[in-house]
Length: 185
Ligand code: IMP
Ligand code: MG
Image (cartoon, helix red, strand yellow):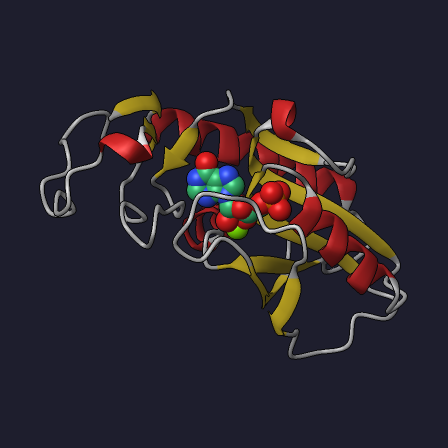
C-alpha cells in the first residue's frame, strides 16, 4: 500500500474548497447532496469548512459492489428526502472515475429543476473518463490506480483510513484489514 495523499493535505485542500463554495453561494443556503457511501468523510469535513449556512441530504447509487469494475448502468437505490426545485444543489462525491455515476446523478437531479447544480469531488481520476461531467470543485487529480481510504473502499475494506492510498487488488492478502499502516496521519 502506497500513501498518495496524506491527512494534512486532504484537510488543507478541503478548507480551500469550503471557502470557494461559500464565495460561490452568496445568496442562500446550498444543499449538499452526498453520494453514499464513499462521500462520508469528505462531506463531513467539507461541511465544517463551509462558513455559511447549508443543508445536507444523501443519495445512494448502485455501483461497484465488491469488484473494482466501474458501473455503467447506475441506479438510484436511495433518493433524496426533499424537493430540490429552485435550490442551489452541490453533489458531493468521493471520486469520479468513468463519470457514469455522476453523469446519471446530474441528469436525474437536473430534471427536478434546481436553481443551480454544482459538483464537488475529492478525487478526479481524469484519465479514466468515458462520460464528460462538469466538475466545479476538485480536491486532487489522481492517477489511474485503485485508491482506498478516507471513504473509498475495496470490497468494504480500508474505508476508514485517514489518508488516500493506492493498492494492488490482486496482491491483497485475505485478511489485512486490521493491520493498517500508521503512516501519514
Ligand atoms: P464512475 O461511475 O466510474 O465515475 O465511478 C464512481 C464510483 O466508483 C465512485 O463513487 C467510487 O465509489 C467508485 N470508485 C471509482 N474509482 C475508485 C477507486 O479507485 N477506489 C474506490 N472506489 C472507486
Ligand atoms: Mg462513490
